[in-house]
Structure formats: structure tokens, C-alpha cells
Image (cartoon, rainbow, N blue to C red; front, side):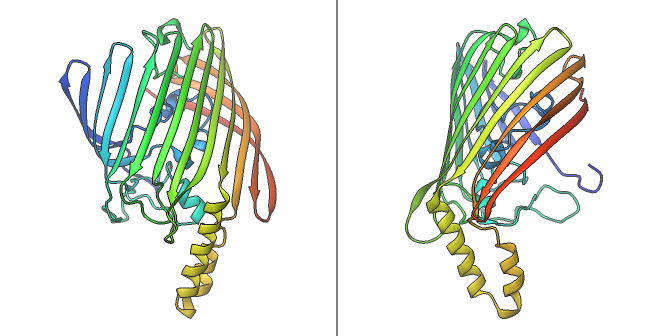
Length: 315
């Protein structure tokens, strides 16, 4: 967008053998089939709120992906440092670590964080002809049946307050006639900032349902939730207090404001319903959704209402 241009993808694909390819460059890590979707194909106006907490972001690295009969797989080795600040930022949110997008043009950033190898991949099995690029029930070409996937990510040396140690995500897609269902679960273990070792830190889910009403209309609904484990909240607060206490006196106030929310988030959940109107396939369409979101923090509960309208032109 104007004033905030950034590099999204820059990669090279090579076909190794029939059904297997190698990709090298800046690309999404292969964590959940849901996150592999294009923004233009989402059932509602934006990604589910749970996805930024866990979902794969662009990183520098290489992956090998392929298909064999009804199986699909992808496995990659990456730097472990996100190139954008949109997804895979759940640990940073809990620890109130400032977000940065090294891929933003004009800010002079290169690889600004220490590199630490991260292995990311998934394995899936589904019905013959099932098209995972289409989350809704757009047409018979999308294929009916099911797609079951298990994604995993392991960071060899996670950075305190920023990275998860291990992430897992079981996933199920169902499609029958004009009805489609996507269900994704998320689990994350985090290496605490002290010497106490890793702990289960984050759990979440995303459930989406779509119903096609002829060639021009589609109804969609979503329920999503994220929970932060008490042990992770305590570690985030203790780390923030220690950083503020160790700061020079002139920097304490600013640092205290930066880490004021560390460890305060307990959970968040939301419900959305929406309608899609198609003009030219999924390239020209209007999306309208509305819903409710609840944030549970140490200081109390906050309820929010959202109404969003998006007109999409994507060719």
C-alpha cells in the first residue's frame, strides 16, 4: 500500500521429478493448508484471528513439496526469523515484544535477527481430486470429499519472547455439494526465558463453514479461539519486569510502557458471519461480514463488534 510497500514473495520453483518440486527464496513456510491459501480465496474478509498467533509467515529458506496418489507433503528448512509481521507472532504478542517487518522497503533492513534453523512441514491425505486451493464449495471442479493434514514446526534455537519451540496443527477440510467445512487446531510449546525449560504455551482453533447459494452467492461463518497458558503468562510478566528493572533510569518509563501488556492476555475468541457476492469467479467479488470478539485480559474483559466490507479485484 502507499507508504508501506514491502516485499511479499521472491522465490524460484524447480521441478525435480514428476509431482515433486523444490522452492528456494522468501516464501510462506508450509504450516497448515489453511495458511497456504491466497488472500483472494478466503471465505471471509480476512484471516482468522487465530492464524496470526500460530500460522506460517514468510521466511528465507528452501522447501521440497510433492504429491503421491492421494498423499501430499512438504518439508522445508528456514532461517527461523519472520520476514513480515503478520503471522506467526503469537509469542511476541504474549511477551509484548515490538513487531517489525524486515521486508518493508525504505527502512534499510536486511536480515536483522540472529538466524536459527527451523524445520517446518506437513503431510496430508485426501479424496481424489480434492482442490485445497479453494476453501469454499465454488464448483464441482473444487472436488468433494475430505483433506486431513498434520503440520509441525520445530525451532532449533528459538529467540526468547519471540519464537515458539514447537508448533503442531491438525486440520480437516470437508466438502460436499454446496457445503464446505474447515477445522484447524493449534498447539504451541514455548521455551521460557528463564532456566525452567519449555512449557505448553498456546492453544487455539479455527472453524469455518460455507454454503454456496447458486453461482453468485455464498454464505460463510467462523468461530475461532486462542488461549494462553498461565505458565506462559507468568514468564512473560517476569521477563518484562526483569528487563525494566535492568534498564538505565532514563529508559525505565519508556520500557515500562512497551512491556505494559506482557503476560496480560488470557484468551480471545470471535464469531463472524458473512456473505460473498461473485461477479467474475473469485477475482471480482464483494464480501460483507459482521461479528463479535471478546478479549480476556488480567484487567478484565472487553467485547468488540466488527462490521467489514471489502470489494476485491484480483486477477
